[in-house]
Length: 137
Image (cartoon, rainbow, N blue to C red; front, side, top):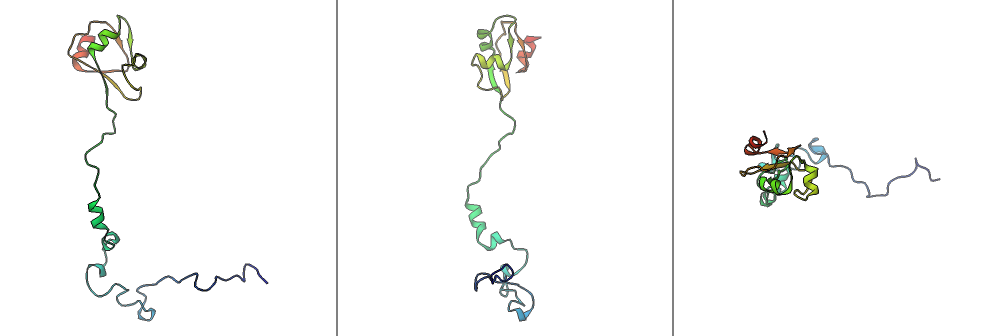
């Protein structure tokens, strides 16, 4: 009768694990299938080195340089502010996006320029260079 306790694996499907270094009677004692001398026979050699992977790892081109996790500023010139806004207007990233002066709201906005700021506008959530800060005060 067939039941769970009578089922056996068919012959040759399951091989026993090779137990290395468990005495000479096991057939894998003394040198534990590593051979006599040399780097591979000793402990502490990484498998990557033994499998010839070190050469492959060295050949792969690596990505060079540094990528900052901080996003780059979207730069706007003072000249653009003078042309796009009137007195007492509010300048914030949302308004700048509406006027298509910036691409996204995710990246910070910075106003740069050595020109004079001719319009009196209020800035909100915007970084400024030192020369622009002096003019807004």
